[in-house]
Length: 268
Image 1 (cartoon, rainbow, N blue to C red):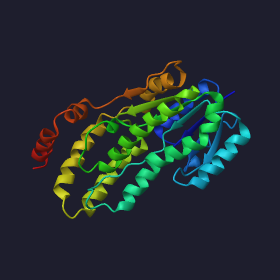
Image 2 (cartoon, rainbow, N blue to C red):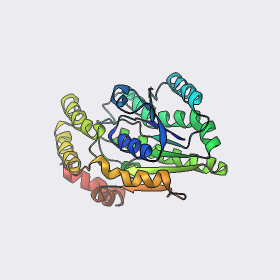
Image 3 (cartoon, rainbow, N blue to C red):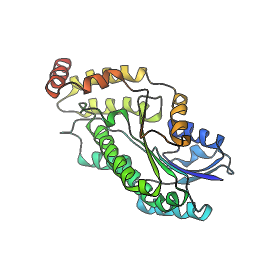
Image 4 (cartoon, helix red, strand yellow):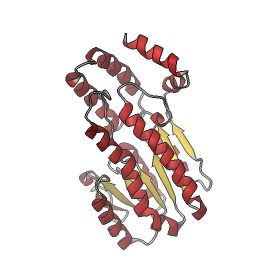
């Protein structure tokens, strides 16, 4: 029997991944704060564990349970994540604190607690970044983008540190998929428009731009091929990119002053 841990297990991309793992004979330890969404999985293949990745005690308890059921982990996949929209001069620091606690430090803690079990299996870590992980700053999207830039650096550091044990560390940069997080962007923008003191008109324009991007979001099933490669390939890529926005990539490679000019012209 092979064993896997997945954080953020109730999310759309995570559910596709769990399906792939089941097909390959894995038992999955599914960590999430919403375990009611995981109760439909057969207990012979899945152990649902309520776990808030911002709570170190909860992570300790989760891995105590995992260690009681297996002595090695073949793969750890970090999906747990959240998004926040708003101005960096208006949003309180606690918004950034919470987002970093989930997107970066949650991954950091989970991977640390998993390490002895991953080392024993000579397994692999798969860390979910984002297409925003390599993009330049997007106005009103600084919180999520900053966290994913940090994930990029953390992932590469982890890979270079644990490679001597034969452990593989793989990074995946998904673009826009139809998931709960993507749906949440709409409500985040609505809240930002209602509460801003300085940017209402600009945020309305930004909301329209982001809505157009979300229209091209793909079904999570399209993610299956990529995660299958990351899980199964003997020599996987260091990075997998899937369904990224060519418009955002093209904008990001332009000189900074030119990007400023484009954003300034768009926002008026």
